[in-house]
Image (cartoon, rainbow, N blue to C red; front, side, top):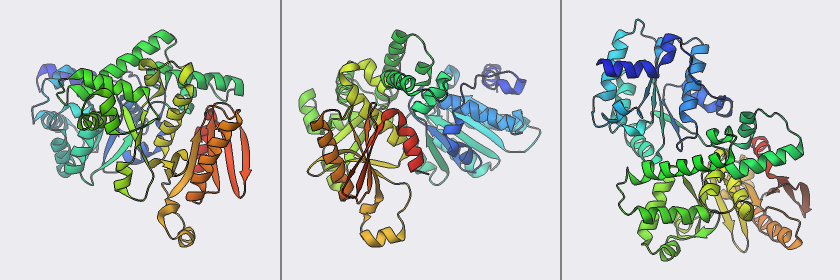
Length: 449
């Protein structure tokens, strides 16, 4: 290892020299599976959009290891965003040579925790990690990455059965309160804080920034970095204006039904281009697609879809006015929260529409399956979103769509999420819980216990 590389490696591993390093505000308690996966032999993948806190979580894992007795020399951290490593991204021996030289100098043969940040920056990462896993049983790999297509495709083909993954999202509202240093605020204060959260989103850097105008500028920078580094550059796109216009349209219409053909007509590009660019945006976690729930996969694909954005702050920073589109932001927030907790989310539409129906992570009981005799029982929750139910027509419309979904999926309870209202409605044998958005996270955590 030459002197330049040695200096870089040492600067990235300050704990070797008992130096302090920035661990940020603790988030590990919100990701219990990470500690569980850390203790498994499989490779641990921390994926998610840029700036959501993957690197900070890696530092918190390092701090956890040190505090629980792991020798500091048994932790090796490599950040592939470092310019020196970026210049060597096409060198197939890069990671192997670093690890070989480091392990040859270790005095003990205990487990080595190998942290590699921004793994997608290295062309041969999957080959190198598979070799470590198969031939060096004393190495536990913890990887972070910002592009799901690179990670999932390479991992699926090269690392099949060898990895466990965890997606890191922007802060939830409960995490937002912790970052603000606020515990159990009164209702009025909680409403004000949720309004701030809805407007600026949950990126950790944004939450701790006091200047609102600077928040918006940073959010715009995040957005531009995502589409430049994770869409345009890796996919060698030439007509950037088509991509930018399409992303702006999709983000500005979050929660609306769309089809590739309809958007292609509006944007004056081909349906194939719309599909391709939308997939790129999904691969870097910027956008998420919601499909209609139906028994047929072909029908799911053929039906109109909905688009939701990674973060409400991103929506606000690049598209519409906050006060005029608060309802749409609220719906996007609910999607993001459901997406963090549940495996599969859909929208329901027969005669009426329900914003979200959720497939449970947990199998139904044998008794339930015998009664229903179909996979309809896989739907465990129905959720409607409305800024307010004070207008009777709005309340009737939202209840109508929710009740239809509850009847179709044999649910006794359903939820309508509002900005501030709380109530309970009983219709026949169905119970509808009307809850304020700031309480939704706690409700969902209770539901999944």
